[in-house]
Each structure stands twice: as structure tokens, then as C-alpha cells.
Length: 275
Length: 293
Image (cartoon, rainbow over all chains, first blue to last red; front, side, top):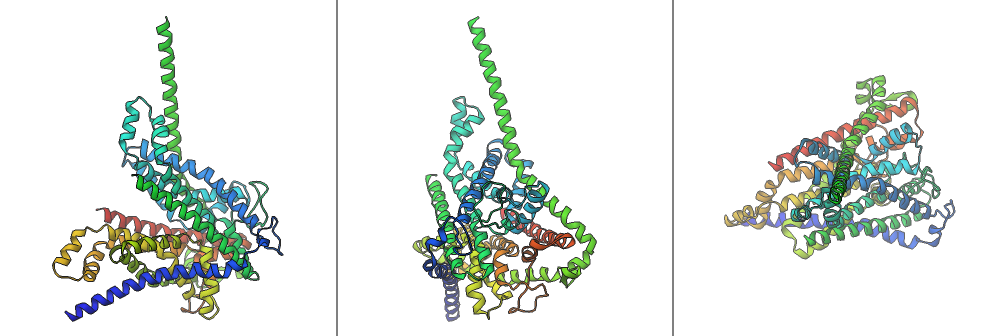
């Protein structure tokens, strides 16, 4: 009896300790970056042009926005259409569906550096797009495709069949049913996935170094090389001379990513509550 | 006459509709096939650019060679393969117990309010970019461990990074265990702790295994966080406190200035990494299938 009590106590202790470590690790990482970084935030970091005096992160920030938009323009239609096919058109459990799912799963497991290598070999070299925003965006769009596909699929699947039956019953075709009835209902769920994809793009480094390159100015076109905020932060930290500015850049990056994830989570929550 | 006309118009509209439906179907199908195409293209381009180098160097010399000296045209990646294994193993040793126990906490010990605060924290941990983790490791963990990049530093950073994966996947499989199991154990006189650890945890085993495999995939594929804390010396791993280089960092470190066979050897490094990932993916889907049965 006593031994049982002791072992129960030890197990309980281990469980609480682990949870404490997890939360502690998060607070330590975020807190440390904030404490060191916030005092170093200055207007100089947001000047229009980058130079080695001001180490402005604004050009990298603008590049990040541009590359995100570009990647989404490619990945969102592809992902949503693919999900529409899988949910609304294909026979459930058909062989093709299984193969597509398997490939999407494979894609989601591939590390970003392998995407970077592929982007360099295919988009940069074989298609002769060079180190450019376009090469980077194409690489990233393949990378986030599985995220968007999966969340869109889930969102579409959670639309009740009665919606479709009602629409068919009123004489609408499949296409009209999909775009007028099913999609509007699934949009918050899809949006949550898209925003999750945005979070991945903003945080990405390894897939971009050898596709979009590391040029430090704001791009003037999609064929220009450009660094995003994450790549910028990596470059700063590698130089090792600008530790304070790196902290500040980390703060900006962290705040953006946290906001994006919170937005995605709250959308997903609202979507699932509606069900 | 009037009726005929309107009928003709209606069938024309119907045909138009049919064409549109067919076109849309093909468009959606094409989009769905993009993932297949992407996997094929990735495999093809990596193999075409990497395999010739492996053939030229010799597969055994490449995979089992212990020296990487591109300057002397010596390309052995065993140090990097072992390096990847070492940091991943280290990350698992630290991350799996903490992750699984935290999942148990969230699933069976925490009050609703605690879950509500800790879960977003875990999600936040998942969203932090790898450069930020790497930088944190560089300015906090590396100085604590003597100021030089090391295997231990890389393992600690990776352990933090794989925590959210392990926690989320384990927790959902723990939650999925039927409550009758737990109640049965309690009815037989087991304590809450004992019921959780000897009944619920074993029942959720395949989900926890899947979580660990996913964590392995993340750890082995991580590049930017590792490069900032691992020291990156291309030599056989020499101990916890010594620097080492992984497959991923080998690529990032040298791709920028490499040419010819050196460049191809780096792509071949990517091929080896890719094959490891495919094996891990396969194992993952295997455990998932077992779970469904």
C-alpha cells in the first residue's frame, strides 16, 4: 500500500515536472528574446533602405510580404482545387485518391533544406529563373501545398451533405453547388489553413537561401533576388557583429509569427464551434 | 416555332453547362495531381543531380568514408550521417519523455483551465521559426555549455523544437482511449496514476510511436537551428560536448561556394537525407495504418 502511494506520487511528480519544463522552455525562449530585443528596437531598423549602418529590416519585411502573396497566389488555388477534387468529385477511397493522399503526406514530411535543393536544381537552374523571388515563391508554394490541401479537405468534408443534396435538389449542377453552397460554408476552415501556411512561409529560411537568394534590398520585380525577414535574421546572426539588431529582428519576427498563428487558431476554433 | 427555338436554346445551354462541368472536373483533377507531380519532380531532380556523383566517388567511399575534404576531392559523409543520428537521438532522449509526460498531463491530469492556457503555449512553441530557436541556442545554450557549438547544444535546441509535435500527436491519441479502460482500472482498485500509466498509455502506444517518428523526421531534417549551435566540424562525432556536422548543415554550409563534383556531392548528401526521410515517412504511415486497424 505504501509502495503504491510512493509510486503514484513519483509518477504525478514526473508529469507535473514535464508540463512545467514545457511551459518553462517556451517562456524562457520567448521571454529572453523579448527582454533582449525590445530595448533594441529603434526607428533606424525601419528605414526605407538597408545599409550596414542602419541594418534596416524594412526591405526584408516588404520582401516577406511579397513572397508570401506570390506563394499564396500559386498554392491556394492548387490546394483548394485539389481538395475539391478529393472531396466533391473523386469516389471516396478510390486508388487515385489514396495515391494523392500518400504523395501529399510525403510532401509534408520533406525537410525544408531538401525543398531548397530541389528549388535550386529545378526552378533556379533547369527553368533558368535564377535566384529570384519567383523561384523562392514557387519552392515555398510546393512546401505549403500539403498544409492547404489537408485543411481545405477537412473543411470541405465538414460541410454537411444535406447542403449538397438541397442544392442538387434545386437543380444546381455540381460546379455551382461547389462554388455557391459548399465553398462559402468551408471558407473559415480553409482560411485557417492558409494562414498556417503563411506562418510557415514567414518562418522559412533553409528553402529560400538557395532559391530566392540573400540580396538585402527591396525587390523591384519578381525576378530579383531578395531575402525575407527570416533569411535576414540568419544573415545578421552569421555576421556576428550586430547581436543587438539581431535580437530586435527576432522580436519582430516572433511577434509576426505569433499573431499569424493566433489568427489561424481563432479562425479554426470559430469554424469548429459553428459545427 | 417559338417552342422549338426555346428548346434549342435550352439544349445549347445544357451543353454549355456540361462543357463547363467537364472542364472544371479536369481542372480540379489536374490540381489534385500536382502533389504527385511534385514528389516525382523532387525525386527525379535530386537523383539525376546526385547519383552521378555517388557513382563517381563510389557508393561505399561516399557513404562509409570518414573524411570530408572537398579541397582534396575526398567526399565521405559518414561523419554527417552519424552526426544527424547523434543529434536526433539526443533530441529524442530529452524531448520524448518531457513531451509524452506533458501530453499525459494535458490529457489526464490538468484542469480545463490549465489545458486552456498550456495548449496555446504548445501551439506557440510550434510556430516559432527555426532561426529564432537557433539564435536562442547560440546566445543562451551554447555559452552555458562552454561557448562552443556542440552535439549537446544541438540536441537541446532540437528537443525543444520537437516538443510540440510529440505533445500534440500523443495527446490526441491519449484522448482517444476509451474511458471504460480507465474506469475499469479504477474499479479494480488502481490509483489514478497507475490507471493512466499502465492502462491508458499502453492503449495509446501506436499514437505515441507515431508522434516519436514524426519528431525524428523533424529533428533529422532541421537545418537552420542546428547550423547555429552544432559547431559544424566535418569530423566523426567525438562526444556530447564536441562539435559535429549533420547532413542538413553540410548542404547549407557549403552549397554557396561549391562547384563541380563538390556541388554534386552536396546534392548527393541531400539524396541520402531524402532517402532517410522517405523511410521515416513509410514507418509513420505503417504505424498509422496499424492504429486504424
